[in-house]
Structures are given as structure tokens and as C-alpha cells.
Image (tube, rainbow, N blue to C red; front, side, top):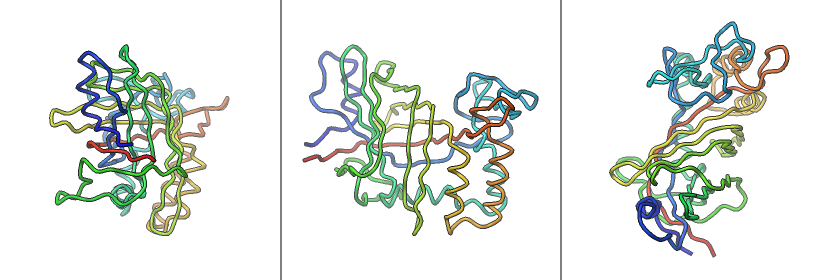
Length: 270
């Protein structure tokens, strides 16, 4: 079965009738969401506008959205300038390299259920994608499903005339291979939003909380990360965790976000 590009669904939502097949896009770029100078894209994930005096936010200052919204949770993104300053700039390229090689091949599938309701799935693909001269995954390719990898299944995502897709309670597990090491991070209690661009491609953002214990365990095994970066991240897990506080204001999750771009794709299934 060949499933059609996501653009066909987005356009059809403003018309009469329902597409016969689910629609698919492939994530082309995946970038950690930055938080510089107290400003960050993202959302208020915990429903609390907190500062350094508030145990409800584990004594972490929330950030401000570029549009002026308060309470934005992206504590890991606020660490990126410090990580990069200690020669940790490889974090971003390592993630993008996993996307380009097919190790982290994320396929976004939408099915129009009628009545403005979209079922949304994240599926792990298999195989190495073709890369264009611009260094990014080319649109219009057909991918196999990797049944051994976890995905995400969401029912009745919110949509704004087909131009925006939004999900709450987003959960994403990201197991991947970086060089000879396997890492596995699970984002919990998150949010997802995707916009259709004028050129038919897509851009989006998702964010949620990752257990600090998972980050510690994964950073410990990646050979491409130096000891100074491990030490910085380990310290940050104690000082920057900002979600899921206990009675003493100790948090066991840190907010993390990603931006992404996606292009049309096809999905092959037996």
C-alpha cells in the first residue's frame, strides 16, 4: 500500500469528501529547541509560571515566548549555550546525522476521520533516505515501516482548517543508534504542533519532559561526548530539572523541546 503525501490531506480538509488513504511526511531536520537570554519557543508544560523562588517549578525560572507568553518550559534548551561553550556543539550534529542516515527516520501519518478530526501517528521508518544537494532528505521517497521501533498513536488531533495540527499529551520515545552506542529517551506529557508552509513542506515543534535518570544514563555511553560535557549535563540534572516536583520541590524530569521540518513522503506496507 502506498500512502499519499501529507499535503494532499491538508488541502482536502478545506474541501468536500475524505481522502481514501492516510497521508505521510518524513522529518527532514530535527533541532534541539534553544533557550537564549530567557526567551524560548515552546509551551507552559506544567501549568505553572514559576521563578527561582517557586517550589512548584523546582525553583527554576520559566522562560518567555517571543510573543510575550510567560511560563515557557525549556530548561534543557537554556543549557545549550553553556554546552556549546564547552565544545559540546556536537550534540546537534549528532542528532541530525541520525536523521540523515535513517537511524532516526520519523514518519508523520495523518488520517482524516471527518468532522475536522485527524488521527495522527508517528511511525519509525527503515532504510537510508536519499539526500539532496542541499544536504537534506529529498521529498517524495517511499519508506518501509520498522515494526521493531516504537511510535506514537494519537486520535482526533485538533486542526485549524488543515493548516495547523496540534496535540496535547504527546508522548515520544526516541531510541536510536549513534555510532556504536544505543540511546533511548522518552518524552512524556508533551505537546506537538505542525504548520503547513506555503511551499508545501511542514515545520513544527514538540516538547515534553524527559527523566533526568534517562539523560544521565544515555550521556554516559556516548563516545562522542567529552567528560566535560558529561559533567556539565550531570550537574544540570540536579540544578535544572523543572518538571514533576515532589513534596520537597525536587524535580525528576527536565523540559526538552525540538523544532523540525518535514517533507512529503510515501509509506510502503505489505
